[in-house]
Amino acid sequence: MAIVELQHVAKAYDKKIAVADLSFSIEPGTMFGLLGPNGSGKTSSIRMMIGITVPDSGTVRLFGEPFTRKSLKRVGYLPEERGLYKKMKVLDQLVFLGQLHGLDAHVAKKRSLAWCERMQITEAIHKKTEELSKGMQQKIQFIAALLHEPDLIIMDEPFSGLDPVNASLLQDTLVELCKSGKAVLFSTHRMDQVEKMCDAICLIHRGKTVLSGGMREIKARYPRDRVLMHFQGDNSFLRNPMIARAKEYNGMAEILLNAGADPQLLLAEAMIGARIHRFEVKEPTLEEIFIEVVGGNVDA
Figure 1: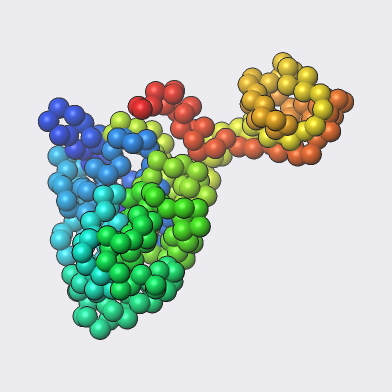
Figure 2: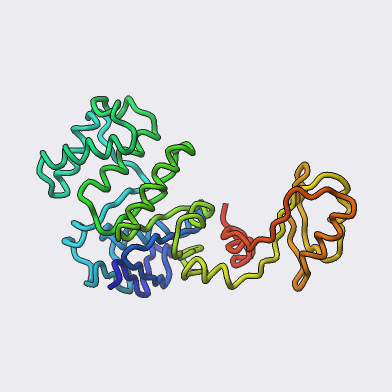
């Protein structure tokens, strides 16, 4: 049974189409990426998914049933726009938010303390929110979304404002929750993060789906025609006619081969005048696939 199912969902505000005919489903234990550039319709889609707004057309189903407010008891949501109480102390705030999700105060406090330790913020539990960094506040709201142990976890730009160490901490936590059977949807414009973490994606642009499906299946549609090379010496091999495009950065070259070109022939030519430290034939990145699909027509 799908945890989330959207069928032909659409939403417009005045004359602006935010979402047009969007369909996807998310199974238990799946890390799902809803991605696209800023303004593509990601947040509008999430808001319809959890009842903040109502679709103009189409249907939303959660946990196998048409959406109702009671479904939200099993949903954890981290919004893009943060909403913590600035004057409230961290622990008091987490207990309060846990109670709003139906926990009693004792359970909410016990879980809050455990999560604060896991997120490495125990030193902040008696501080007011306004005294903390944006990254620390982000982790507090992350905890608040998980206290009631939801089956569907929705994260809208969860890594915004986090340094690499804390971003990695959140990533690892989401992966663990997914392995435990939770369905995790996160929305981001950072396609490198999605590529590392997600089992399936829906990529939208200007409110429309441009790419969807399993990550491996999507990648398999495209040829392994990228080469990454670290070298020392003569770079004349970069003018080989089998190369469609090449970028060189101080001894490193990113190469796009023409259709049908044999990368081994390129390696053989490069070795004539250069010492090769690394030679890797790669599939295109998700970002490269997106640019190819939309033709570079991306809003600023």
